[in-house]
Length: 66
Image 1 (cartoon, rainbow, N blue to C red):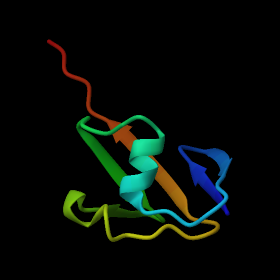
Image 2 (image 1 turned 45 degrees about the vertical axis):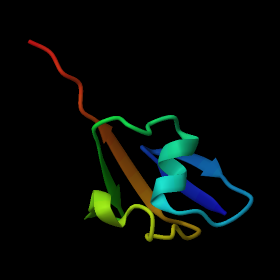
Image 3 (image 1 turned 90 degrees about the horizontal axis):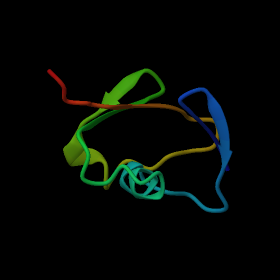
Image 4 (image 1 turned 30 degrees about the vertical axis):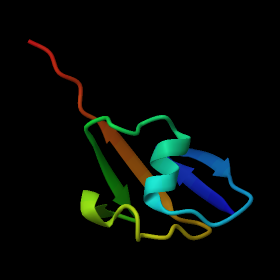
């Protein structure tokens, strides 16, 4: 399965959810926003939202500063 993540193609051997992708990318516990094919995926739906071959994912990590 091929997914575009922040403009880079990544291959995965089996289907996964948004939550599993976040864990795989070491973003668990961080303040993030996930967009799938142009639509925001609510944090409460990460565990139930299955990714499909060809999906385009954008992940933005919030960084504090000041």
